[in-house]
Image 1 (spheres, helix red, strand yellow):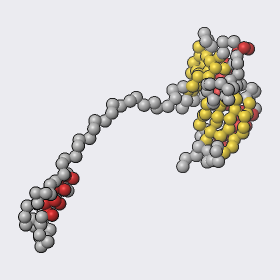
Image 2 (cartoon, helix red, strand yellow; image 1 turned 90 degrees about the horizontal axis):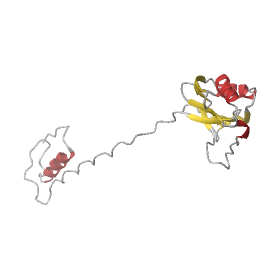
Image 3 (cartoon, rainbow, N blue to C red; image 1 turned 90 degrees about the vertical axis):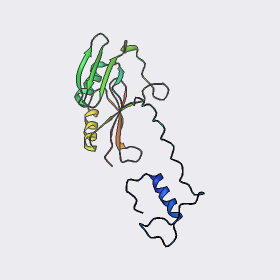
Image 4 (cartoon, rainbow, N blue to C red; image 1 turned 180 degrees about the vertical axis):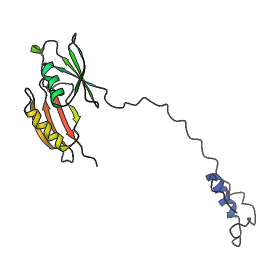
Length: 189
């Protein structure tokens, strides 16, 4: 018996079961000598696939990060002059600065009373522990480190080092208003 290639699995099982009734002398391409035994039946058709669950809206990533700062001008200058962000807009009534580098968007909001603003403690407060920004290469990470060391108000928490044994390398800073920012390069695998 010749079996077409696009035969469903249940049909193949029927053909095999039908051949179980063949005599050993029956060759390939011959008809079976007797019909299959009544005890040997083809298995029932498989249950239909369940309907897929309705799609849930997936989160694709961050749209922007908003940071409260005590010194809007100094924080904005660090993002623009050192990290390469561009000023996309301002809101003098808040006041706020809206910055982008084409890959990420950061909003800097000045605290209502910068002199009375309470510094965030990452170990005791609930809130943003740090913001991590991708860096294009190890060399770019080293160049940023040099530029940030020379930037007024920036505190280097630790210089570039391997992240958890590598291969990624990162550094951590506090921008002029005290927000923690990680700069990290992850080489392709």
